[in-house]
Length: 132
Image (cartoon, rainbow, N blue to C red):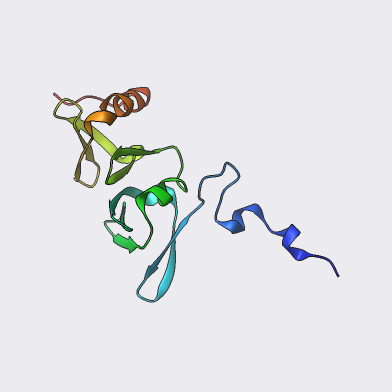
């Protein structure tokens, strides 16, 4: 008898070919929902729990740390603070000498002092305009 585990499609494991997650599973109202990284605007960590915010305005709570989720997401996600992971596709403005990022959903996220240069460099690379 053949071992069928060797015939598994690579995306069925939840990972894409480049190693980042093809989706993140969350439990909501007794159902499992799979969120594509493209619909996630930012993640907010609180201890062993993380809130995931989507571009539709929905908020999901998962019992995983921000660090564990960061390893599953694509490079568009930036760790801007101990408590925040932001999808750079949804950053619309930099505020207060690059200490804050304004997201398309209206949320303003603090950038830690240690991360300012790194985040500024990443955003300059994507030609994001600086607010006056």
